[in-house]
Image 1 (cartoon, rainbow, N blue to C red):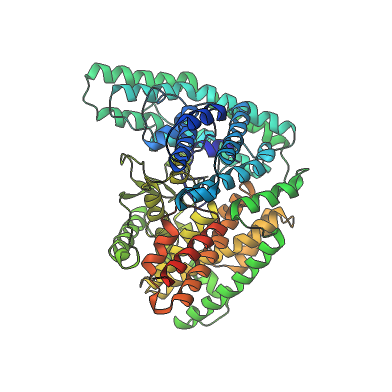
Image 2: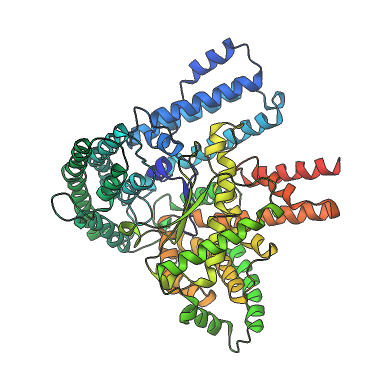
Length: 614
């Protein structure tokens, strides 16, 4: 799914559209060779299974230089992008399934340790989800305002490609030179899909073209001063202790690579996007594709890891919306507002007191909330994040189209911190009422805590340490927002209202995502529903709805995952009574890493049973 996204994304998006935890370019070693090696090894079954997973991971990395960079591996592939072709994806899928067959042929999960048996089941489930999604891969959009190489490759260079020596600087230049061929490969794929009618709605194209133009017109003079990518290279290069002449030559090479390779390819991409815009339709849902219904059903199953139907998801969203509205009415009474709930929504949307005046004001308040939360973590968590967390604004060249907020995981070697990106393009879409909940979701105790712990799980296979399950990861992020209330936050009733605003947005996603892709709602119908039923700022509503159009199904995972975690916590508390330990419960959820929701329930049940047994 979202081929380019699977190759490069490490994070959670906009409040926060989590993408797969680490790029999994699925190309393991030949199963026959692995089987031979295992059968010849004298090690026990648990070690043999580890060998299989390590061989799988090693071959994945060999095929994905970008994945290596996310892991902090800077070797001979550091200057390459990898192969974005469909042929590469087909080969990877075949090898993934062959590796799963090898695993099942060689191992009996009942003969493995508890941890390895879990790894067996998780790998098998991952392969099954991938096999179910694979037939629909050509229904994904190659370029849209949320996804695509046009914005993600420059962002990768800026945020992930570090430079510690001249060789790594040259690798940056090599990647700039390779931007042209990489974009051309994806332009051809996008053109081919458009011939089959697979294009985003017409309104998407101005966003993509705007991002392209931001990169094409940026920079002045022969050295492109002010260009976001070239300036990033220049700033990293300046920190190196190498001769000035060598620095000057590398900078000259970088400018030439952008001008000679990247910029012409961006112009070709722009021309293709303009061409597609002229012929694109206005329907928003994927129901319009011949296999649209089956495609959407697969997406819901893939993202939620449940068997909920689209209609059931829709009804769940309506039910949760009504519940949260009742809680909002209670806060409306606490602050003494007289009027209808919709009038209160409009008040909180429009009163200037609820919005930052400057970017600096917003960021300073995020820092304060994060530091206050950090002091409380030990009371609720036995296992704490070891990686630092930094907060950064989204880069200017992509902030118009990027999501509201997202998170990038730390590098396992400690070379890169966890990063919470906040989009401050439109301050009127960044309510101060929601600031605490958003920071807790993306940072601590949300994504940063969970992903730092996961990345540090050195005793589990790499696919668990660096992979992801959306319902688990985003469910944890949304759970963290409510957990913060238990921890004593949201003392200002308007901040608590902001928390509920964030939660009702997630409930509304169940309604609107299924409305667009199952019930054939238009983009405007979805916007109108949000405006009538939630206090979310109009600008945020528009970007949220536009996200669901091009990223179908993904946004349903948040509430489904959160409700399961809450259900399991309530179950554990009811069964254990005074023996219930919130720190132990959080370890039971976090220490196995991301898992489908049925496996999460099994893990928590086992933890409950172990406490009952003393």
